[in-house]
Length: 306
Ligand code: GLU
Image 1 (cartoon, rainbow, N blue to C red):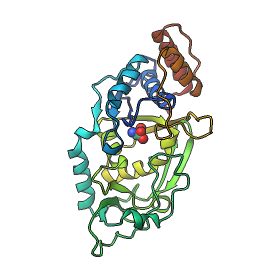
Image 2 (cartoon, rainbow, N blue to C red):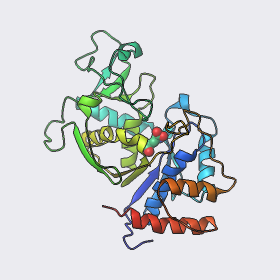
Image 3 (cartoon, protein in one colour):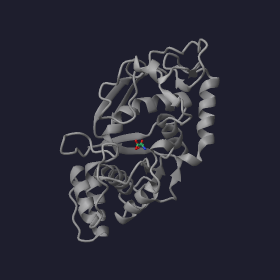
Image 4 (cartoon, rainbow, N blue to C red):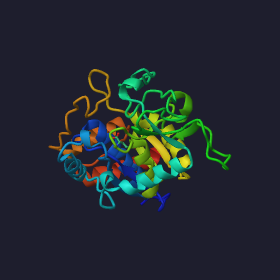
């Protein structure tokens, strides 16, 4: 526990079980663990397994085992999003009842005509800019997905209702996105019935009392959508810190989708050392425990809470 130990700090690591941890995901896991430990907080693990078609059998157990072998242990039993349908349903119902969300009947083909995301290869959960086709009714089409409307603010609340979201990332600094302009009405529940990452992450971060989101920079582009959704649902906004990415030799982001190799944990200290180097951490220790203590001290010095 450090001098600025903040008992209310709650952090999380939220892997999708689409494969084992790789060198890049360990960076995010280590950073979120270090930040929680450096600030005297609690650290939770949430398995984001809603996207069933992408889940790989046994990957969640493998990830938990890999974290354990690196000495990164959660303070509570991990939760799985697949067990939490009713809070997502309740959030969606609230948005629909307030006319802040609507059913969309556009097919994949309709959407292909919309503008492609600027750098969709590199950033996770990017979407095409939605032109608002079904905003004013399905016009005879069958409902497929459900979208948040970005052209309308909740009635009776004046502050924080616009769609230009400005936020300060602890590492990246001042960030800004006009969600209506750059993303449009984004998906809350997919046409295949899967809860969208944006809705689930916002509902769960609030339900778990997450004060600090520390995750890879490839997710930074989702933050404005998440803050907008938090505001629409009257939920608090956590602090954000997006960590550097590990790039493959090709210069592309290392990811499970592009076939990144699972972590080699023959010597967990080697894997942690490499992840620490990406984070600019100077840590010493010949045992896992000593290395982690040293890394927490260095993290504390580098990343004070704002
Ligand atoms: N499960 C999400 C993903 O792997 C990350 C969630 C988050 O940290 O916000 O894309």
